Image (cartoon, rainbow, N blue to C red; front, side):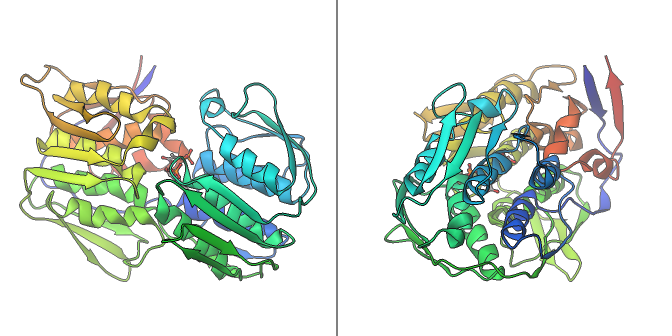
Length: 413
Ligand SMILES: O=C(O)C1=C[C@@H](OP(=O)(O)O)[C@@H](O)[C@H](O)C1
Ligand SMILES: C=C(OP(=O)(O)O)C(=O)O
């Protein structure tokens, strides 16, 4: 087993953190560039494994595309290989093969794709045999399972003979990710509009235009530094580079979420400066629009001894791991618990009557966000994070950045 042992810093922390760039923005830019015939000038692409995997698979002639554990790579490439008429088998890690893809496959079949499942109906691995436009440009899909299906469909839609009218049914989760897709499509010349009341997205047919695109730093990765500032000794200041106040990324909501937890954000032309103010002792947040922030905030409140009510976390069960179960197990180790107070809709993080003794060893379940969400606990107590290499999925330089604020000792057992 590999682990890192993190020790509380000696006093207030002061550091400038370069951050990784956004894998979500990068993976969209890469698909859009591919649809122009690779004619764009993309800057600041992420070093995240999910993005490096996308780059590798877009260039590859192999019949099998292994996306590893990258959800966007799996969903976006499925749609991309269909519309570009590439016969490919798409597969991934055992966990990826448990993450549903049936709704996207059904929508692509309606548009004319020939796709078969290799093992289990509705799940990877899958085989794309071909595409012949069905004659319909109207598709409907649930909006409350994964927005990645919707992003995948609308990104390929300008290449369909009659574009696409996509109707979303049920509630819409992760909507800022759909809006990010639409905004990036527009930069690449697409005509895409959403009527959110009618739950319809319309994409006109037409070619994407070559352009220059620069990816912003990753706001999901920034969230761990907000948690550091919430938990660190008074007088701490952290500068995060490459973030913008007006971001395409919905996880910039961390600015508002962390204000009551004592973190002030001031934007500069380099990024954002995080400073401290007194924190409140309770917070309620709906994570429907920013599911990737739930672990950051849950672990932060657990360590801060602030009560947290969470709603909108249904989708956490089908991500890199069942994140609800993972949080329930690991919060206990830092003296807190995650309790389901209304079935599948409302959860609370609160303190246990007695905290366990000793240094907690946090398991990470092949989930980068479990590692990064619990690392800031080190601002209050020593903590061990197991399998720290998981961070490579989205933020490969996370531990290097963390070493700017405190000691990170590697433990090999
Ligand atoms: O489109 C994207 O880049 C993403 C969308 C979200 O997934 P869901 O739409 O499945 O919630 C998010 O959790 C994921 O990390 C990245
Ligand atoms: C859920 C995530 O990624 P994906 O769905 O793209 O694997 C994530 O990065 O937290």
